[in-house]
Image 1 (cartoon, rainbow, N blue to C red):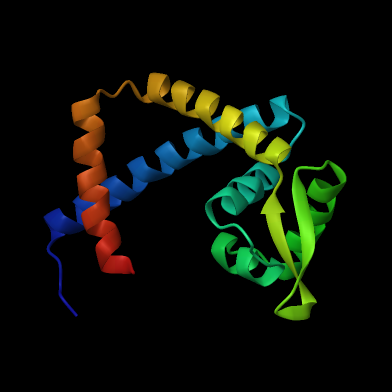
Image 2 (image 1 turned 120 degrees about the horizontal axis):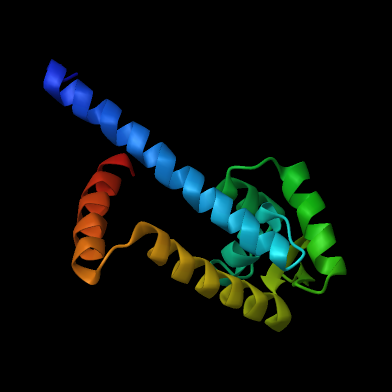
Length: 146
């Protein structure tokens, strides 16, 4: 294990503190836009996850979202009732279902996320150069945690 010095420790603490503030802002805006369209934040997150990872299962979604299976199952039932998610029996395993965002769910999710990202960009007041630099740094950090 590498021992870090006081300056590195202080910088890491500052980064963690700043990251928490950014995440709180993201969550606040996400809640705002989800509720504006009659969705809970986890419902929006689940639809968006199905857009990115189609033909998924409750177990697969639970792993991706780091939620328990019963929570995901409850959310799915509500989204099926709202016709935002579809469920078909998996031909490879009759005891499982394949879950997908419906066209209605996909369109709603994309519309919400576009508005959310526009406001997030305004709140953060970042230009293209800033965004590129931040993405590069976060990509490097992310490569070490996978």
